[in-house]
Figure (cartoon, rainbow, N blue to C red):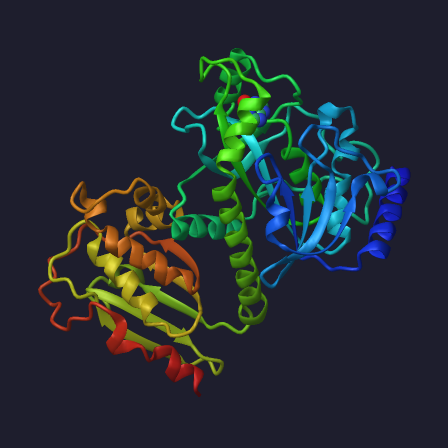
Length: 445
Ligand code: HPA
C-alpha cells in the first residue's frame, strides 16, 4: 500500500507540473457524456497514458484523459474515460484517478454512468439519481493496508451520496423539466451482462439499477472525505426485465440519444452546486436561527397564539425573543391545507436566508416535505383535482420554492386530535407580504 501511496504522489506531482490548476468539482463521464469536454472552457488536459504507473482505459469509446477547465465559474476536472475492474486492474488501481482528483483539490465528486434498469417502473432512457449503492459483489478498493493520510481504516458509509447535492440535482431536473428517477445502484464486476436470475437477485436485494462501475469509486471518494453525487442513465432494462438480448452497441446508442439532456442536467447541477457551496460557506454561519410553528398545536398550545396560523420566533444575540404571528388565511381547514399555507407564509416572511426549524403537527405534511413526495407528484404531471394532495399542488410548489432560500429542518410534533373549524381566522394573510419585516427588523439592529 505504501507503494500505492508513492505511485499516487508521483502521479500527483506529474499532473501538478503539467497543469497547475485547482479543480473544485471532479466529474466522471460515463457512456454518452464523452463529448462533455467540448462544452467546457478547457485550460489543459493530461492523457492517462502520460502519467507513469497510471491505469489506462482500454474500452472502445473511452479515450482516457483528464480535462481541466471551467463550467461557468466553477473549476472542474473531468475524467473522460474511466478504468473498470473488468479490464484486469486491481480495485486499488481502478480508483487511482478518483484519489488523484481529490489530491488535486476536488472536494466534490460527480459520478455518471450507464446502467441497466432493474426497477420495473423505469424505462430505457430514464435518468436515475443515485441515492445509495450495493458494492458487495466487487472487492472493496479499501482492502489492504490503510493509507491513513487519505482516510480511516473503517470509514462510515451511512450517507455516501450527499443529501444536499441530491437535492440540488432534483431541483435542477425539476427546473429543466427533465424527469428523474431515484434509486440504489448495484455494481457487478462485468464485463458480461447479468443473467435474468442475477437481475432477480439484484431486485430482491433492493437494487434499482445495475452496472459495472461507480460504487467502488464512491467508496474510495467517501474514504477520502469527498462529497459525492451520481446519476445513472438507464440505457436499457436489465436482462430478464427486458426479453431482448443485450449488446454494447445498443447501450451506447441509447446513451448517445440521451447525451444532450444528460449534459444539460449535469452542467446545470454543477453550476447550482457552486452556488450552494458559496451560500453555505459565506452565509451559513451568519444565518439566523428561526423557528416556525405551523399552528399553536405545534407550539404545544392549540388555542394560544398561532392557534390558527403560523408563528415565527427568533432569539437575537442578546437572547431577546421576537415573535410574529400570521393567520394562514383559510377559514376552513381541510387536508393539511392550513398547515401547508402556514408553512409557506412563515417561510415567505423571511426576507433573508435563515436556518429554519419548521414545526408541524401534520405528519403527512412533514413526510411529504422530507421524503420529496412533492417532486414525484410534480414529475408525474398531476393536475389539480385528482386527489386532495394534488388539489394543493400549487401550494406544494410554493412551499418548495420558499424552502429553497433557507436551510430547513422540518420536524413533526404530536398535536391534538383534529383541528377546530377556523372561524377565528379573520386576519387574512394568504401571503407574507404584510409581514415581511421580522427578519429585517432583527437584522437591522
Ligand atoms: N448491466 C450492466 N451494466 C450495464 C447495463 C446492464 O444492463 N447497461 C449499461 N451498463
